[in-house]
Image 1 (tube, rainbow, N blue to C red):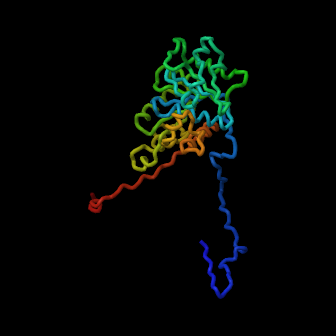
Image 2: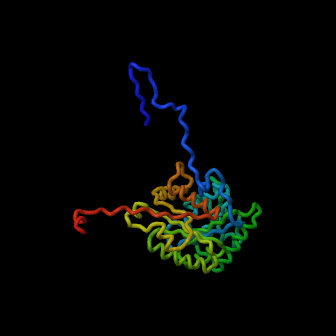
Image 3: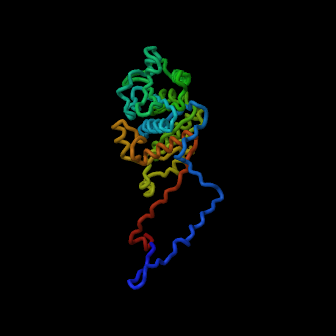
Length: 318
């Protein structure tokens, strides 16, 4: 802070002549600095459209449906047309997270039975008209015996050949487990987003699912690490994102911090990415959606561990 000396006998005179001061030279970089997320532009869509992405994990309760809702609406806010398919038979929840549970009148089962058209089963979001929801079945209902991967492939092909045009993204919310529902959900997909949490049970299931995805021919697999707490990582009570990436060997799409606002947004049917002001978890979902559009990934950094407290007897080697 600059200080000025003023005497009652002498007129005020500053110590520095600001007119003669020159601005410091600009630092020189050998390469121009480019931000991965440039919010002054629209993300550039990579790959052929529509991109069929399955969001899976293997273990339940890690945040697949939350990820589908927030990433899907983020893509719609970026200007892309999105169709989100809830492939969880009998236990659908994606409509609740989106606040569309009262508007689902028809499902894919009625479409296959010839009871309605495909456009009647699609539920358009009122907030973003380029986002649509499609549910496989109604709650507490069973699928017909003939429904399987081929039926979902037919459904995706029907979405591609719609009169209003093919969507840019088809997101499939995969059910938990690795049974028939999982096999059905991954059949039409050509890329996958694996959602996991930094605990050993979730990581073991994620590793198993990664192998099944690769056996099905899906090579473009990226992961989202959900419910990360830096305070527990520093205290060595939770595995770091770098440890998770080294264990699974997958490209990192996003890191979602633990956020109490997730429960509030779920109960209200209002996804995090629509909150204003945005929360940390909502911003992280937006960044993950941006990377998904451009088929980009992020780099995990190491969180410095807090030094352990040394007691009195540590001076004596204790």
